[in-house]
Length: 145
Image (cartoon, helix red, strand yellow):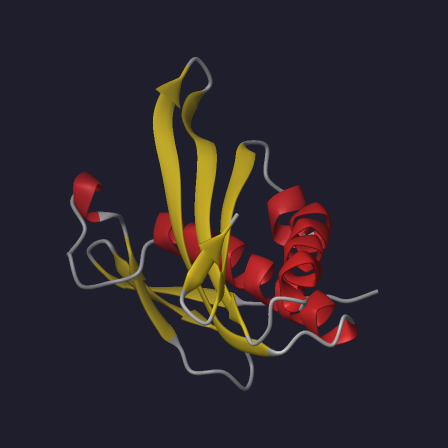
């Protein structure tokens, strides 16, 4: 069993700090759309970031197991929040992933690793909304999906 513990401390107005032992603190606030400042992380940004980060670290695990010559990995996660009959809720997370590998032989392995990561990412599995992953694999400048 693994546990992850954080502490959240209110500072003033709509701002606070997020702490976790051994890691740098993060300044947090209400989203700008709801009156918070533009230059701080909101829980909504952090959630989208957590989905992207979890998919990346899960993919890296499966790429390493498959011995893929990984050259680069980048993703962009867009969380969509809407008013629902139950109140504000995320209705989807869309993750655009670009992976560059070193050889054509690694393309299928990279696609499979990303698929396995999508199925096993614990952060995505914890969400009620759909998590849609759109993947491109690049081999020396050639894109394949």
